[in-house]
Image: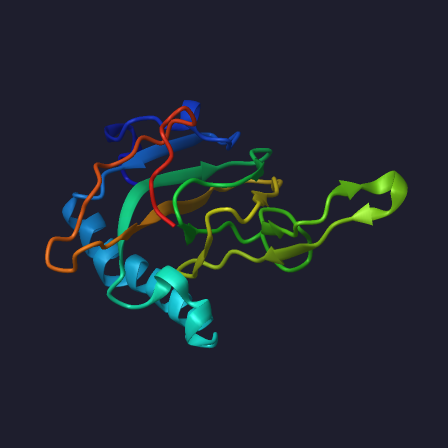
Length: 199
């Protein structure tokens, strides 16, 4: 956050219409600690929260020891007044966001600056199909993990200040032989990239 220009600009590769979006590298020391200590375990907790409540035959590839989680993309988002992120999805298996800095005018009094998760229903107001939406008020230090297919957006806000967040994508890699775990190279943020091969 103190020197964003030292990281590659990711704006041309992402959906966000934001002031700046900067790529981070998973092998950077601070980022590596964040990924291994918090983000990947959070994805694992999400998987276990869902799968451990299912019958054994319904768990499929999500049996512990049959997959490995790997960070493929991380980037910083800096949002100023009027910036927004249109509804979009991510690549990989799981995605997430950490709220780093939130201006005081982003609060529960309006939808300004909030993260919105969209339901699968089509939106067409004239026929009263308004879909489903769940708004999340950003709070510095909070983070969310969700399936990469989950449509989401970020509302614009008004006034001074910046809304900073860190977004990430994680892929689940099948383990054929638990002794020799496969790995994949870091995948570009480009929308033209080959799909990460996971579940």
